[in-house]
Structures are given as structure tokens and as C-alpha cells.
Length: 213
Image (cartoon, rainbow, N blue to C red; front, side, top):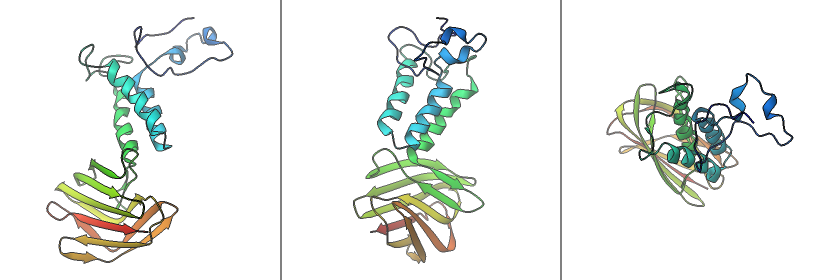
């Protein structure tokens, strides 16, 4: 069996591009990718796993990459594929977005989160077209409290979406000392909050959302 290019060594874990349950791997002349392990496709696979709710499997794939490129063995800032510092490895950012369940549409003023890791107490950084900041949520069986905190620039919002533990029926939105009129529509455990008037979130003016079932 021609293994193609080798990006792992003995005893290391990785995800092979394809399997051959009925044979045939030696017939892929000129198509070396099928029998290889490289991080660009592993990150894409992990992101898909997170998106499908398979958190344990997604973490296992990303942990394998982390261990292979540990600073004790290799350069953790250079995940080699066809060459050094290969662009495809930037799919690692896609894993982060999928693990956060991140959604963003600048022109529509939409921001959303559906974290796959510890949704009961979760915090992450996010970027948008005109600013960046942090998001935090605490979730119980019947409630979800979230804060969108912009640290630089601004983020204009009209809708914000969440994944709740049960259908959300009531919402309260605040910005500073002001109440922001809003409605919520739940489709199963997906809740979409629509602000009656768009809000601009900027440093020192976080948006706070409380959902109740």
C-alpha cells in the first residue's frame, strides 16, 4: 500500500482522508490525498462534528492535532501540508466558530450563538464587521441569560439567536439602564429575539438578554 505523503509518525493519532473497507487503495494512482492525514481536512471534519452536536468526537479530532503539533515535538504554528505554513490549516478557525455555534450577518444585523461546549456556563470571543468583543451565557432548564459585550468598535443588532434547553416564551432585553422592546420566536430549542428597534452595542454599553420558558 502506497501511503502517500506522511504527516504523522508511529504512535500518533490522526484522521485519514478515506478508508478502504473493500480494498482499492493501491489503485488511486496520481490521487495521493486519499491515504493521507493533514490538518486542513481534519479541522473541517471536526467543525462538521461540532455542527452536528457530536462534541466528544469533535474534541477527539482536534486533540489529536494538538498532540501531533505539540511544541515538544514540532512547531505548533506551522501545521505542514503541501508546504510550510500552508493556508488550508486555517480551517482551524472554523472549528472554533462551530464549537461556539456562531452566526453573523452584518447587513441584517444578526448575531447568534449555540455553544457545543458547556452551554450552561459559556464564554467566548467573537468578531464582527465593525467590532469585536465577548459573549457569555448561563443556561438552565428553563432560563438563559446572555450578555453581548463589545470591547472595540460597534456591532449593530436587529436579531439575536440562541439555543435554549426548552422553548423560550418570554424575553427581556436591557442596554445599560434602558429597557429594549423585543419579541421572541421559538422553533423547538432555537430562539430568535427580534429587537423592535435596532441596537448598537459599543464599549461600555453591553446588551443583556434574559429568556424564560
